[in-house]
Image (cartoon, rainbow, N blue to C red; front, side, top):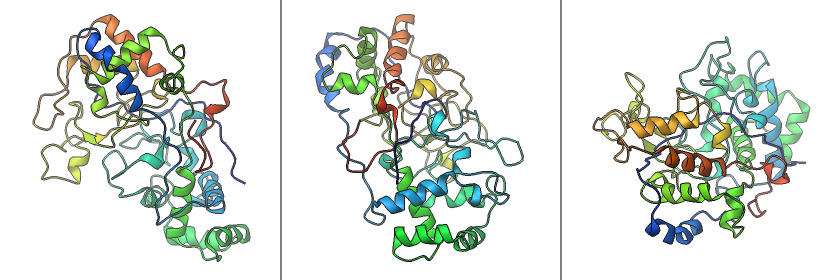
Length: 350
């Protein structure tokens, strides 16, 4: 039976489009605070697509597949190798490790709040849906190195898995589509735990300090951070050039070569658990959140694809401290049950 998994929230994801403005939050921003807070209320339940509805048996099958090295050629790697619950469902590395001990081009993104990832997925958007993601790492020679036909054959030869597929899909037939559907169902249950910020927006005025409230005002007001990091999951699922990538590292531009705006553009990640998910950016090139804010303070490379929010900001030390204080409130409290990240789909959000 699928149960809650604990996350100790560190690990992997980048931080994009922190378009920060100079100057402390003013009265106009403070006056809009209540309006902004309403935009971050949690959803009532986890969304599942009609083409892949939730069932406990399918989710349990997905959980089992996620943690089982049976899906790698030499049976030494699993999905959890790069997406660890104790590292906020990333791996804590600047770039994902290859099977041979080298480094991949990109870092492992967190799986937190995958259910709310609309549109193309992956740093460059090469996956059209969560159901299409797993086949790439399973088959990639540098990753799990197992042909999908061989994965199907292995699972089909295992009586326990045949029984699990029968429970999930009504008959014991194993297929690539069913494997992906089960994994995606489990991954949609990986949900960020309740953080101090969540208690604050639902009425607990003492849940976060005054400095974090000032940071929230900047984040949503003149700073413009919420232009990309919006809503309860703190991402609009867009692709943005923040003026850092160079050379052949062109992100979404590789798949959309005719779009000027998408050259050097990468997926905007969630900011949930962000202060425990260092290093940052799609390639892990920035070590700390303070360094991320310093980077945006300087402004990125001036080029046609650069997001309009990115420019030199001339932040004061106090403003930087307020933004850091706010970002810290997005991390679930480790001593509370709400740090669990797998929930039944009809349960209220933490």
